[in-house]
Image 1 (cartoon, one colour):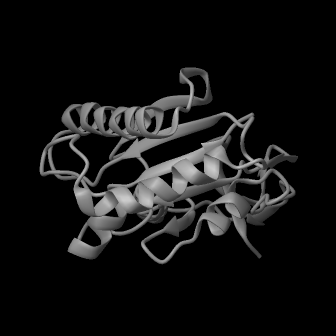
Image 2 (image 1 turned 180 degrees about the vertical axis):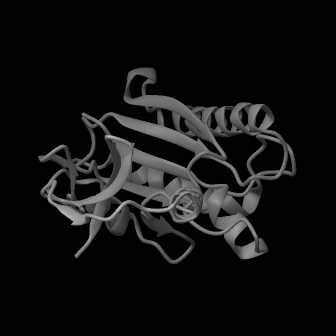
Length: 201
């Protein structure tokens, strides 16, 4: 049975399942209660954000269009019993100069595919959020600012090269707050400092 919540009742620590039914009726010792809290905190601290489809050099313009079409909802999330659509999104592994928002030339072919996709008939009237993410190298404040500048750099590139309007592209910075892989490895950090395109219209 999956345990959902931990609560206090008249000085007793008890577990409840998803229906609120008690699972453990005896009073837990202070030691077992502390251990339970530690376990819950450990699970919380290692949680990663949902991993989106990740575009790379092999991704086609058609792949990007399909990922961002409204009928391509990936799944549903349940918030308090209310199902909500998860918006269509796709991540792009855009590479920048170190500690900079300057896009490397090697990443421009991939950005060009996004520009072509957003010019297509199927996405021509869509509005997208460009979300900047980083790994955990550096401070939270620094990474938040860096992720904003990089998202802004991607937005400006698409505006200049493909004539996309200001109103269609909205910037949001997440910094290191939503990793989708481990920051303990070089490969994981490379995936985490990404740019996501999220359709919001």
